[in-house]
Length: 193
Image (cartoon, rainbow, N blue to C red):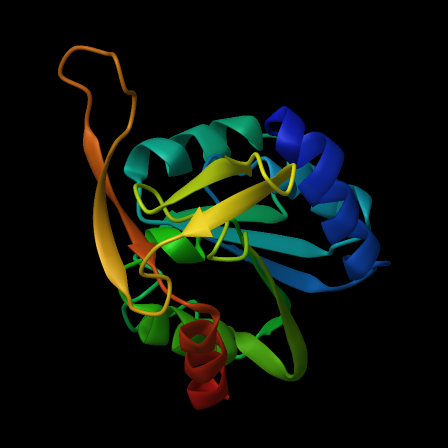
C-alpha cells in the first residue's frame, strides 16, 4: 500500500511535502500503476482522486485497493493519447516515476497540461536521466584519484531501450525504456504550456 522502500522513504515523503494540504483539491495521478498514492492523497485532504494507467491489470488492482472510497476513480487510458480526462478539471496532476516509460512525451505533457485548471499545477517525479540510462551508464573507480565516478555514454541523444522485466525468469516479458536528456523534458513541458 505504500510502494517500495524507495517510494516509502524517499519519493513519497518529498512528494507529499511538496503537495502540502490538498483539502478540497481534485487530483489526477497520471500513470498511476496500482494506485498506491490514492490513500495518501485522500489523507492529505484531496476531495477527489482520479488515476489513469494504460495497464488493465494495474487499474484492476487500483480499483480493488480503493473499493471502499467512492471519491477515487481509476480508468484504463493511454496517457499519451487525446483523452476525456484531460478536461481542465484537476487542481493537481502527478506523474510519479513514469515519464521514462511513455513513448510520446509531448502527448503526455499536453494531456497533463490539458487536465489542469487554469491555476493547476503538475508535479513530475523522475530520476535525472544521467542516473537512469540502462545499458549506457555504470559506476567506476579511479584508482589514481581514489574517487568513484559515474560514466554516462550517449547521454545527449534520445534512445529506446528494450528491458527484460524480470531478468533471470524464464520467458520474462520485455518492456521499453525511453532515455531522453533533460532538455527534451524541459522543451516538451514548455511546448505543452
